[in-house]
Every structure is written in structure tokens, then in C-alpha cells.
Image (cartoon, rainbow over all chains, first blue to last red; front, side):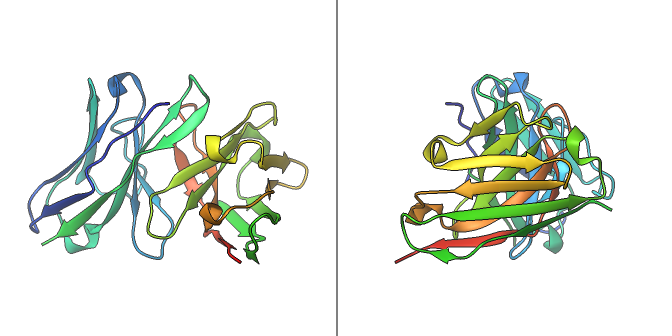
Length: 108
Length: 119
């Protein structure tokens, strides 16, 4: 089965850039989506199709995907960005949806 | 405005059954794949099951295959998850979610319904 691997935690100072990775075998050939989840709330889509932003998501959020790693980049990090972030693909080989294990972003 | 409203969560003993339901509004329900996604306490998000708009494709997470059954009624804009032979590890907040496109991203989530499997 296909596995997506994320670091459990990332810490960043306010105003700096956070990068959260999502590793998978030849993930560059997949479309990767990213979600932000704050405590007690449902997840929110922040990036889809590797690097597209839904309406209402700040330009500070961007994505990239190549080789074996997809990356969510959050520029000029704010305290309100503190949350869990999950990557996700739809794996057509098995028609399954796969989530990464999630990364807790801490703003120092 | 898209809305997904789940119901049916409860406390149930191991080996028991539950039927979760979700009523959708604000979009043409039959045109979209739908999923159930769960969030066990203190753990990561887990995809549970997928159903295509025409109900032809139905797939399941390996650990629930043979115990859970996904279905939909496009005439009533409703999605269901029949859960049998429940295990303690099935305890989670269960979300009804809408797929946004061909590559399977989730553009809308319900607020979730809580399932607790405990003796």
C-alpha cells in the first residue's frame, strides 16, 4: 500500500517561513492536497492539485511537488497558523484516499 | 452554500452496529464522489470509505472492509455508513466529506459525528 510520510512536528518563529514535507514513492506523479486542522475544528483545504489555493486562503500558503517529496510552504508565519497539517492523495491504483500522518506546526 | 450534516454517532459495545447518515445540500449531490473520513482521538486523520456519484465504485480502508458498508441515496441527497462488528479501534469522530474533483481533494467537510466503542 502507498504511504505518505510527514514529520511529526515543525517549529518556526513568527514572520519566518515554515516548510512541511510529505514523502512518498514518486509522489511527484500524484496530485497532492493539503489541509489545516485547528483543535476542535474540521480540517480546511489550503492547497490542492499540488499548488492551487482555494478562494479565501492567503497567498502566504503555497505548495510544490517533485520526485519523492511534496512541500507545503507557509511564508511570514503568524500565530494563527499554528495547527496540524495533513497531506493527502487519491491513489488511483487501489481507488483509495491516503492521508499523511500529520505535522503539528508550532509558532514559537 | 454547501452543507454536510452528519448524525447517528453514539456509544456502542464492541461487536455492535451503528448506521451513520449525512444529509447534503448546496450542490448537485449525484455529480460528486463522497467519502467518510475519521479522526481517532489523539491520532491522525484516516480515510474510511469512498463512493462514486453513481454508487458503482465503493472502496474501503483495509481494516474496515467486510464490516462497513457505504451507500448513498441521490434522491434524498444522503450518504450512509453501516458499521457492523465494531471494534474499540473504530472509536473516532466521523466526517462526511465531499470530493472536489478528479484527483480526490476534499473541498467540504461536515462537523462530524462521534462514535465511541466501549464496554
